[in-house]
Image 1 (cartoon, rainbow, N blue to C red):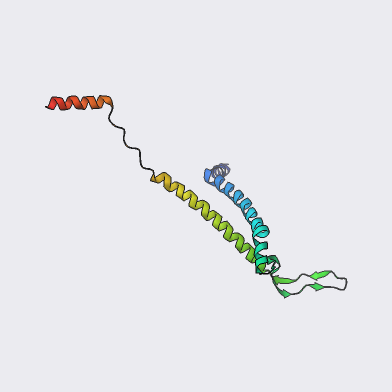
Image 2: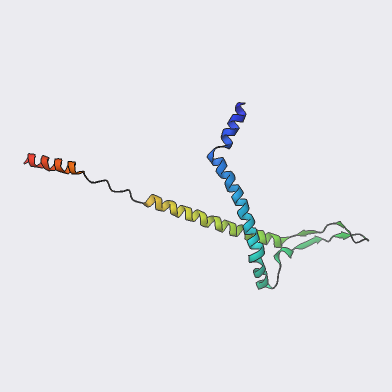
Length: 139
């Protein structure tokens, strides 16, 4: 039973839960960025280049084998470098977005650290009065 208890303590630590939440949010963010790249960025980019659909870019190593009935018996073997280009653009956008978030967090952290400590409070009225009395007694 101690191993189960130890695992439960490990799994319920703040860092593990925070990491799990980060992974889930990161996965959702990755899907959003992939859709953004595939549906918003790449079509105009392909149009600028000359009507190129990046997902269709590939080098065929071996053509598909089709039998007499017209069904494909062996799929084609190809290097899909267009899909790779699209995935690389996804990565660059995700990396840049994460960089900007971390940069923002670091600048906020620096502002918190750079705040000067508040000045010490001045002496109370009693302390001022006692100081005056002491100085008068010295004279």
